[in-house]
Length: 426
Image: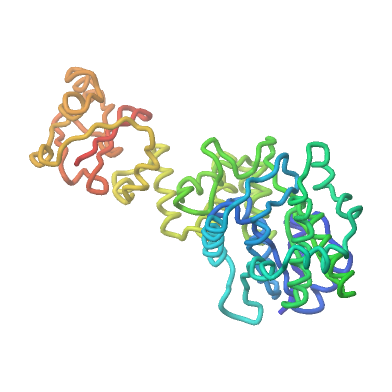
């Protein structure tokens, strides 16, 4: 059943520009719609989730999503609103990037079932057949230089300089639309608002070459309420690849959204209904310290990308860091998760042989590790109930043994609420 997904996107704040006739076409029949992904890295990042969500909404509304990975255009680089020309990538790097992106897209779109199953295409497959002379003769003649220079993405670069390579990018992207229009009956292209110039070059090329009608709409570019760049943290880009950004870090990124941003993000990145979101906003307004909006957003998107088990681990890790955990929470962590959470915490190593007989807590705090300066300081802190092992308070007679090990390797010592120390048993 075809549903009006433009209306759905409007109330979510996901429509900026739209060509005339787009809604009428989408209401009339199942329509193939595509979004392009630039393979500049072997993983997509959270900014890529908006075009992914556009494709997911299209598929849920009964339309056919096409994800285009730019194996050809990635060799050139899109100049749109970039201050400098991009570094050109070699074919081996591009292929590695394309493989990584393709795998990630399959986590969001259904490529296997239904009349509107998703399709993945690579524009290198058709662009490789073109010679330079063939392309400028058969395609370039349809679009004037005046038309190309009128695009904001080009005009902004004329002052600093733009190479012919990047200037030609909009023609290549325009041809992608023409090719998909001819070969896949693809009538719609979607993308970020910075792509409007490239996208409308495609609709114009379709009109001039075939006499047919192609359609387009764009989504506003996402910025944070404080003016910062969305998808960036102090540690860098937030990636979809768990080896680049761990599920815990991914979960924390959404959990740390401001109240103002959370209202916007939950509309953009979840499929929660309008009434559900408004109810969450009311609950949040009544008790903002509970961060109800952020919790709902972080849970939804972390499970969708990384699965329920990794989400539960991320929640457990958050409890650990913010003092609401138990030893059981710690012992559920893998070695990788433990090290991610306690990155930068001071460590000392004790041999496994030495550990066999057990180690008294006073020795463990001072002589064996240097965590505390002396046995006397260790006793005073133990007597004042300031010392914990794996987040649980212990006394002077406590002995560390194998039952304390996390991932059969680590013990977390604590003094007060904020000072931690790791014993590594090897």
